[in-house]
Image (cartoon, rainbow, N blue to C red; front, side, top):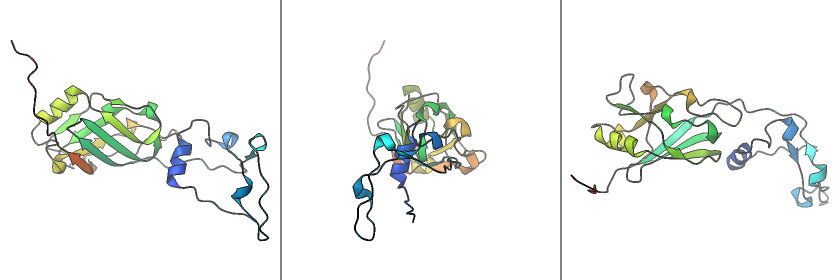
Length: 196
């Protein structure tokens, strides 16, 4: 008899974060404790120890391209948070492929392309970007762009990132730009540092 186990999204993303775990049949094995299952007579399943780990019979690789499902922006702390549909390879992420647009249109009123940003290199379904001071100040200076949630959208091409299987992100043109999910405006007043 066979038992089909559906892996949760969290567990699947955890597995995908590793380059050399469950990436092919060659690195996909399973172990079991006696508590994993019991038969109809209440007998525990035979234990499978790590040194005798059972290799998978058939392996279906990931063939689904990742998507950016939402993003949050905090212009008070200058943080942009991207949430993907699955774990992405952080080393493949390129923030310069992100385009802030004021509205979803083939010719948006205002646009700005990021020049960089700092982010964690851990593979994850979320990437938090600390915007550069230049990018933040420029975005704030452009009237009608990221003034509030209604003027904050993102557009990007497929080069922005790849998942752990090497599949590129589904792109979004400006005419289907992604609206911000959570928007926090800048609430801190400026500070004068020097004068001549």
